[in-house]
Image (cartoon, rainbow, N blue to C red; front, top):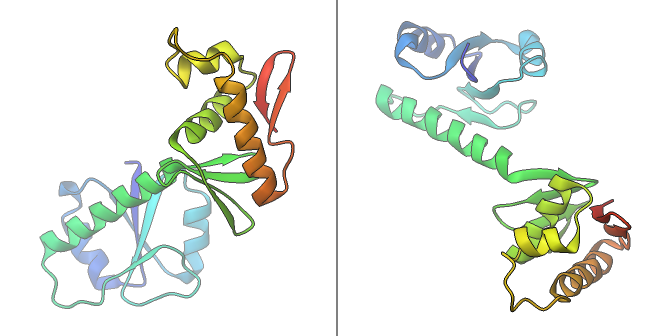
Length: 186
């Protein structure tokens, strides 16, 4: 089974058309109704997309095809583009403790509050989160591409400013911690 699954939700004719040409598609197709839907999505480790003929209140991220007639090539392109959009979006959103870090827009989000970050701050958070305890020298090398001219207090200054921003927006004084082994994210 491919890693992309299109769930055709209560749209029999579309399922039949796509099922006929499925060997030419780069995604798998599943027909579903309301009773089967939760089992499919909850048990799936694949990337899935739902397509329906009308808006479904209980379905998030559902593509609506209500334009008729529609060229088959246009429909397939529409489906593939939406798979790409979902993949791009899921790769850009990281969970950092209780926060969500959006790498694309360089924002950190918690409880409907958003903090805009600089590119350097985003890279700093990403690297510390990825590595765990990180020394100043590692940060200088990986985040700043360490050069001889780099002031040794550059890392500390950026972390101080980032901590201040996190405190001002989220009231979080312990987002980035410093211990004997280096910096870490709480």
